[in-house]
Length: 215
Image (cartoon, rainbow, N blue to C red; front, side):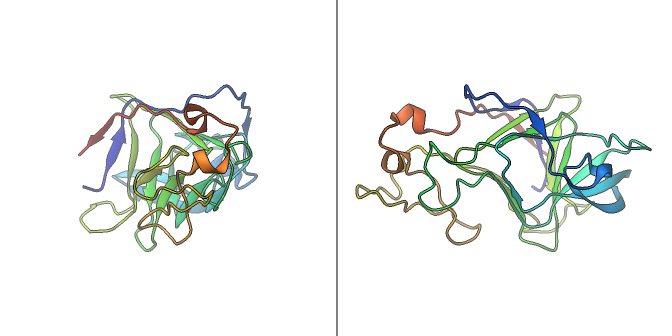
């Protein structure tokens, strides 16, 4: 199964106020991607906009369905590799100081993994995602391969937080939980040991409600 349609919400709860900003990239991509030309995807012409491999602005980045520039084509957002939101993957990144970027994905947006690379979208500790698709206008995560008939074409959407894990417990203040299948030295969990001033519930970077359709 190569395509995932997010039909409801992936949203973290937080009291932090965020404003929209942009990454200062190509205007055709609403400044939030690098323009790679017009491509045909699922029978429709799209602007291919590659995301940078690191998105850490401590603010809100919006991935819109359509370009704001003429001729207002829809955008397909490509993951050219492992795209990391925030900086909480770094070892010993504290809950109180980790980057708190919010990635907001509009309904109808298309997010694709590049076939020729090891690609995935990783929401790191402290960062958040707000993805609100609908049944009529879903957010689609897939491979950029039109036919989606290969294997290992993209690594998926990965959400990690600061809450404890029984897979790699530590009582000596070390950050030991490494993500599997991404790259070496990307960390999750450990909030109890990284910032003792926070309660267990506060150290969890995200409380998520996820509804997805597989097709």
